[in-house]
Image (cartoon, rainbow, N blue to C red; front, side):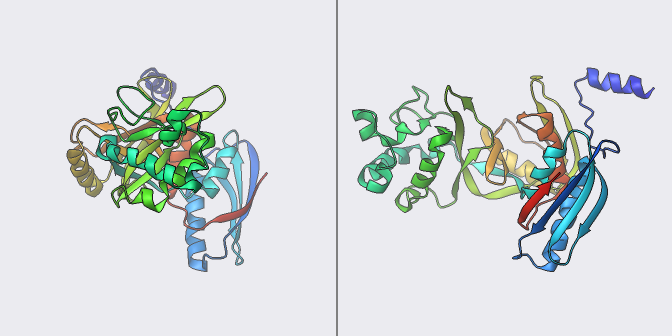
Length: 323
């Protein structure tokens, strides 16, 4: 009977994740220490977070937190042990943030070109290829999200919160430009610019990441206190995995309000400093249900499940050794 149920669920597109602990496989040892800026209480809390994260995916054979802030785990692992490194080091703050439409801030971008041209420090970072890029240096390193074409800020702004795409090698230059005080003054105080977690385009010689405009504060946190149900399954497109979650009653009311105020706009799902995805809200979501699809692999889904169930890691982990 159990096999029949399993086959039926798989035929419906569900993935029966091995989220329960692996009781067989190799024993993997984890040793590291918390940064000494964390006190004893903070280290104990962080150790509990790591325990919850790891036991979501693995069978924990042994664990110990020493007085000096070092810790050890022994886990049974068959195939997912490389996820353990991410679980032991990533802060794991997952949240929903409201966004600015690119059209709302589009007018500021021609002014950025002027600032770059007048600031020798900024202009020196950009290799101008021709007369056009001398006049509009920003487009030499950022391909903007425009409707008419993708090469100039003189066109009409494209839809959504994506400002444009940038080659990985040029992301540091863009960070310096947008952290310039004169550039910051062009935008609302509450704005943040964050990169997509995964590349949005693969070129011949480089990966390209999207730059997304967010409103400063997190709207809803996604963690063990706010989520009451959590599952992973195959997306409708069939080429990636999704996470489906249901917020508790209090957060569902808040999510309903936020979705109502952002109809036909995007909400960003953010993990630490990167945007996982920014879906468009087509109607108010009253049920508290949310599906997250960031072109995830099965490994991504397992990792995010453990992050949500384990919580945020507020102590920095150092000298991590996994063998």
